[in-house]
Image (cartoon, rainbow, N blue to C red; front, side, top):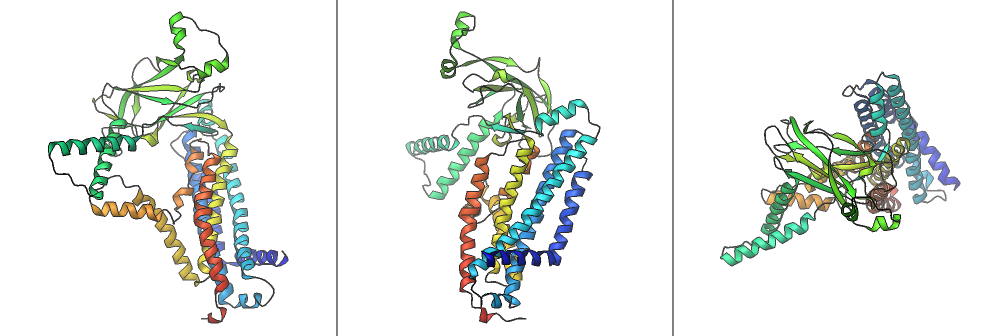
Amino acid sequence: MVPFLGIVRLTLKTAVRSNIFQLLLLVLLVCIVAVPTSIAGDGTARGYIQISLKYSLAMTGFILSLSSVWLGCFIMSRDTETYQLHMVVTKSISRLTVWVGKWTGIVLIHLVLLLLASLTIYFIVQYQYHRQSFSAEEKQRIENEVMVARRVYYPIMPKMDELARKELARRLEINKRSGRTVDESQMAQDQLFQDIKREIVSRYSQIAFGEVREWRYENLPTDYTGPVFLRFRFYVSKIGGNEQRLSQGLWILGFPFLPEEQETGKQKVTEQKDIKEKKYNFAAYPMSQGPEQIMSGEFHERVISSKFISANGEMLIAFQNFDTNREGMFFQPADGPKILVSAGSFTSNYFRAVLVIFIQLLIMAGLGCAAASVLSMPTAVFLVISYIIAGSLSILLSGTTYFSGPADYLGSYMGKILLLFVIPLQAFDISYYVAGGELIEFSLIGSIFLQYFILRGVPFFLLGMFLYKRRELGLVIRK
């Protein structure tokens, strides 16, 4: 234990003396102080706090990740190339102890920096928010929509893959019966499946002029009495683009009631257990007297009473398209509409995001140490940075939804295969959860830890330890 602690202490001293590390610290200090104090946002308290939190946390995670990779490569290679490791291994200290000690030292110094940076950002944002002259209505809005941790509920979605497979089988059967030539190659089948799935998703996402689309939600809290928030974004005419404009639509809520209440004309008093097991109907309740003007392409939130949640945790909402140009509207599944219910404090949610950044630093420091266990410092840095870039590109490749030819299929398959081994930085960027007041579930944190630290990071760490242990130090020549 004493040798291990000694290596950790020496690692901390070496890190502090590094010029590049000192430069990154200066950049980090500028970011955590300048970003929250200089951003104006969209002129509202909500916009200010959201942008300040998102940019500050994202930049902190990025800078500390670079620092972790740099120090991991620098410290591991420096001790080997300056022959300091030669003296260490002459003592009764295993190279495994040396490797873990250096990794622990790098992690500890970045943990301290992360805590200092996150606390500074937290207090600066709080101070700036309270000192600015926002109206009472704006402050109440930010307390309800940002300075809170809200659990997100998505509507029940149809099984798109299952529907696409059924439609594919139906079309193939029709072609065979009509005597048409059918390309039965796997690539052709996959392309047709993707085309059909895209058609189904498009039909489900689109609401034609005058039509009404319903969404049903389940497992909402039945004992909740606070405000419930409806968050949504839609596009007019086409998804994305810069041609979005003011449109009109009407939100309709479903007021829950039991069928027997409708028959008798009065509410029946029954046991709570019996109520939860009953099937509720929903009566239409418009949120406004008529169609309201809504800007497409932007996120919006509406406040809903918790009375619209049935005793068995269900909610039904609908939207009718009253677009002024009689064009269709598109609701992407990722954009909602989703229901948000308060489930915790902003502070606890903020530090859950900090915990995710710490997991990222654990991995980045380990990758740097693993690469430098057998490579020179420039080569190790290049290898780790290339590995990280490959992870980011894999996200883009695997997310391809339109296939125009074999090259698109090849890129998509390569991206999915690479994602089994690489670690994309996008997986750790959850600052938008905090900025949007959405609860970061422990299940999400556990999934990130399992997928990227245990299943991807640890194998590379073990490989680095093995190569470090087997490395022939007599072949190291000082340049």
